[in-house]
Length: 151
Image (tube, rainbow, N blue to C red; front, side, top):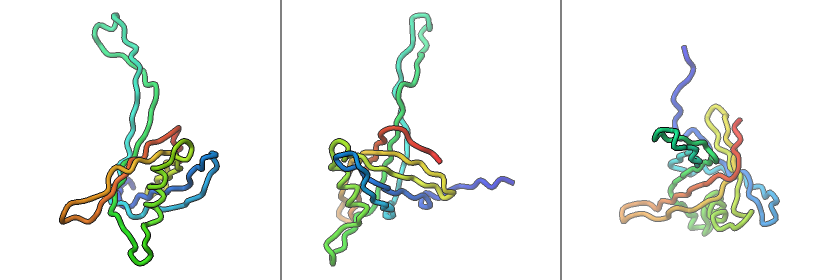
């Protein structure tokens, strides 16, 4: 009998391991993004057209570059006593303002079995808001930079 089974999405973890300062030096964060409601990891590619007239109208290509992105979302929380937001959200928001090397953070996506995907990514805060009967929601897109390491 197989020991493979379906994995609930909420059993995965995402961590902001470190960010880069403007000199490219690592600044440790070690922040678990534990307030997520959803995540979606996806890939992309760019093809070069290698077709010729001899291909009789059939497409022909080679992959030239590959990339990854990850959409994450959650509920926005504030501590009204301490006048602060979660450290993980604040770190993402700060990273989303970065330019140059300071725009990249190292993220670790971990499955329940301990399989990891480690990658550098820039951040865009996609939305912050909600409707009349909603709690405030936020979202971000992480766009990978360079190779991803799987372990």
